Image 1: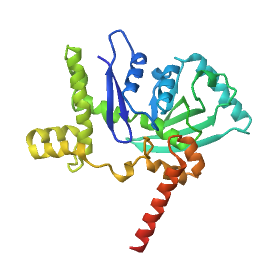
Image 2: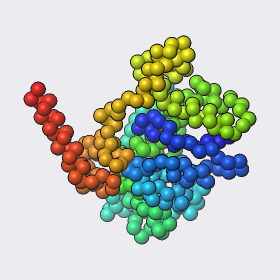
Image 3: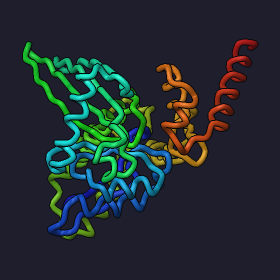
Image 4: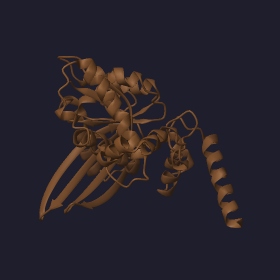
Length: 311
């Protein structure tokens, strides 16, 4: 049985799941899953399977934002986007909003350099009529170096968000957090892939229990061990089990504060301001956030700094 899961990368939480019907696929299930969620102000990332005009419309109907991978399952879109970047590059990006973000990571003997280039798709581009609120093209290029051998990969993404490379690059990178944060734990700790439940309802129910358990184990940080060890301690120590369950009631940390009636974290404002963005640009990129709310946050931050300075 195949499950489609909604994952909150900022908080490491499973928000919902829907099982694919027999002889069906993710394309038919994703709209059902989106209806279970409050997407206002959130950025939804989906791989190429979910790059569908209806799915984009469903996200925008809920006032959410989208970052979708583009591959040859959408051959016309894929072919039409390539000239956009080539033409902009040949004109040296004259009159084209353009931004670049670079990252470098080293782990397990492998160094990976990633480049995110974003640019405005021309208003008269034919694909803007087909894809609701389509605005930005993202070209993500990665170079992996291990044992002096290089591996290159280039991927395309589309989004309704403005052409800001850093936040778009972060959204793309965090999209794969579900692999390490959920799927790997379910496979290694819970051995979900080896499970052999025959009944579809039983499999779905067990999966629904495992996913919040993964989130609870992650949120409990007093025991510096992996999820498998924490599960064993829960089985042996009722007090620790209660401590793990109590994390579900933990108050939201200040860094996780959101703008009212949105899923936009307050820290996104300060990150964008540090990158040189203006308040007007931030409000434009996150339509669910009003200028009054931004000014209130900035006034609160300034007052807090003054109190700290006088203490």
